Image (tube, rainbow, N blue to C red):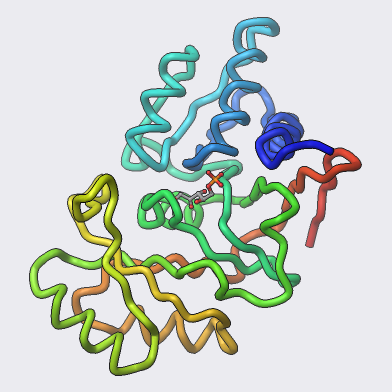
Amino acid sequence: MKTQDELKKIAGYKAAELVEDGMIVGLGTGSTVRYLLDALGERIKNDGMHFTGVPTSKRTADYGANLGMQIKSLDEVDQMDITIDGADEIDPEMNGIKGGGGAQTWEKLVAVNSKQVAWIVDESKMVDQLGKFPLPVEVLAYGHHQLVERLDALGYNPVVRVKNGETFHTDEGNIIIDLHMDHINDPDALADALSNMTGVVEHGLFLHMTQTVVVGTQDGAKVLTK
Ligand SMILES: O=C(CO)[C@H](O)[C@H](O)COP(=O)(O)O
């Protein structure tokens, strides 16, 4: 029986095959993406492959640069040929929740500027309905207590994210409120409602933007396409 980490590695290494020489590639964030980066680093070293990576977090930028990748920011490129990223939950429509690592705003900015989006996950992330994983909502620090109260009044069970005993801050210095909803019946309606709330910077519902999911399973990598 393979561990969850081994399944992440299977997905990350398989997805590296989607990257071709000369591409501009959006690079996601998280432990599964690290395997993708390792695989791409091996191709740079062994095959002399060359591509431009657009990272979705400072962590990914540092990790990729150490592996010899040419790194550019989103402001320095026109469009990504492909973005490959992890996810926290994916439903049968290839809609997902992201932001477990707190990088969802940069991740969404890079994804929406990509010709193609692929996600890499271990099989535990494939679900029938979104919502068991707490939905991250990135908000401005200023006035966030009021926003927590509004989200609570809507029944969304908001919890301000804490890491190592301290309030978590994103690369942009914002705060994350995780919504413990258990199930999300209408992801589109919830996405619209959250986007319309003053103080919300971005939320972790990634809808209608992904065409490929590479799943690490006990039987090897499975590539799902839309
Ligand atoms: O959205 C993310 C970071 O903001 C990650 O892609 C997501 O949390 C999955 O992470 P992991 O691959 O470590 O399970």
